[in-house]
Length: 181
Ligand code: HQG
Image (cartoon, rainbow, N blue to C red; front, side, top):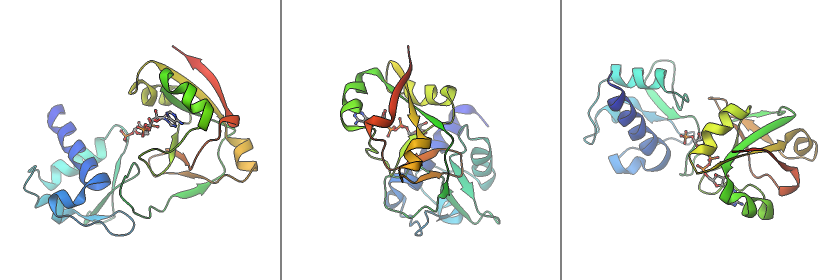
C-alpha cells in the first residue's frame, strides 16, 4: 500500500478509536473495542478489510489490535474519551525515560509530569524511544524517572499492549535530566 494512504488510514483510526467515534456514528464498548464491520461501513474514508489488516500489522507503534476473529478493533492506548482499558499492572524497570521539549522543563520541575489530555503519563523503556516522542514537541530533553523508587513508594505502573509504560503522574522529586540536545 502507498505510504500516504497507510498514514491516512492510521490517522483516521486514531481519531475514531481514541477521540471521536461519534464522528462516524461508531460506539466503543467499555474496553474500547469497536466493530470492524461498522468501521468498514463509514462514509468518510473508504478501505477494505485487507487494507485495515495491513495498516494494523504494519503500524510503526502497534497502535491498534484486533480480536481473534478480526470482528473487533481497538486502539492500544492514547485515548481522550472515557473507556476502561485493561492495562497490565507491572513492576517497572529501575529507570524509565520521558522525552519532551526543553521549554516545558521549568513547568515540569514545578508540578511534575502530568497526564494532560491523555489518561496517563507515557514513559519509554529507553532513550531512543523517548527521543522520538520528545522531538514531536520541540528542542529535545530527556528526563530519567526513578521508577523503582516510585513503585516502592506506592505508585502503580501499567504496560499497554504496545509496550508503552504508563503511570498517573510523576512528581518532580523522581525526575532528573538525563540528556538535552
Ligand atoms: C508535557 C505519542 C509542562 C509532556 C508518543 C509532553 C507517545 C508538561 C506534553 C504518546 C507537564 C504532553 C505520548 C508539565 C507534562 N508542564 N509540560 N507539568 N507535564 N508535560 O503528546 O508523552 O502517536 O500528550 O512532557 O509517541 O509526548 O499518540 O504526551 O511533552 O507514545 O501513538 O506535555 O503519544 O504516541 O504531550 O506522548 P502528549 P507524550 P501516538
